[in-house]
Every structure is written in C-alpha cells, then in structure tokens.
Image 1 (cartoon, one colour):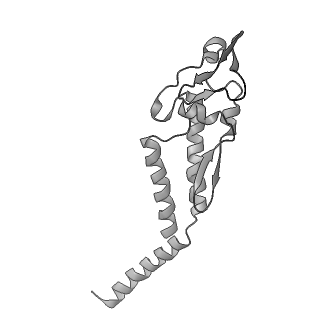
Image 2: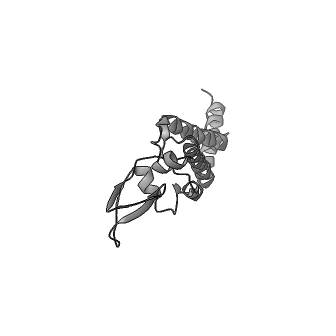
Image 3: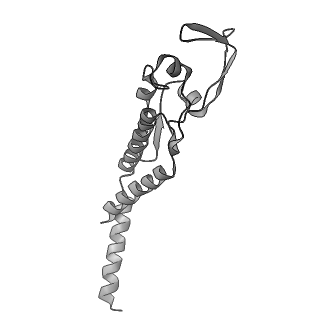
Length: 159
C-alpha cells in the first residue's frame, strides 16, 4: 500500500471525527422531539396508542359524542417539547396527562370525593381508575424512524 493512499484515507477519517466533535446535537434532538410530538398528536386524531391499539371510548364520548380525551383539546394542545445539546424531552404541564397516558388510579385528597359529570348525572367517587390511553410513546416503527433520523443527521455531518 502506498503512503499517499494511507494519508488520503486518514485525512478523511480525521475530517469525520472533526465533524462529529462539532455535531449539532441540539438540532438532532429538536428533529427527534418534533417527530415524537407529531406522532403523539396523531394518536389523539386516531384515538389510538403506539402500535395502533385503539383507546376505549370515554363515557363522555359515548354519551355526548366527540373524541376521547378531546372535549376541550386542552390536553393535546398542552404537549410540547424541549431540546438541548444533551437531551430531548416531550411533555405537558397538564396534570391529567400521566393519569390518562399510564392509566393511573386517582384518589380524593382534600375533599371527601372526586366529583364529575357524565351527561346530566353528577357522580361522586373516592377513587377512580383511569383507562390507559397512551398518547406519548413509541412503537417499533417509531424507533426505526428515529434511528433513521439519527443516521441521516450523522451522514450529513460527515459528508
């Protein structure tokens, strides 16, 4: 092997390392978070979680019509993301989000009961088990797409 050939390859490798040292991780994380946010919004539109599992319709949606978890659309509109050089986060400031996304049990804390309406009927309960309706989450296709976003961004950086 000639010395010139080795030098040419090594120069390319050094250039790739330099490109990776200066890689725009914040830009990558923004693109990834934006993708996950878009997919989460699609889950609301389709009323299904990652992987296509249909949400059980809420009592309100059954009684009054409309879509589950979308009477006011406040929960969907509250979804946002934050991206830095070190991480991407998808989140919301809506305290109901985790209850619905993970299907948690909620208890009355300071009051004697939780009070809500179903149609024209006022219901009081000490605890309620929320149905799990995942809207933030990834399926195998999402993971594949996120990997492709990473590969594409690295590919562009080292070209």
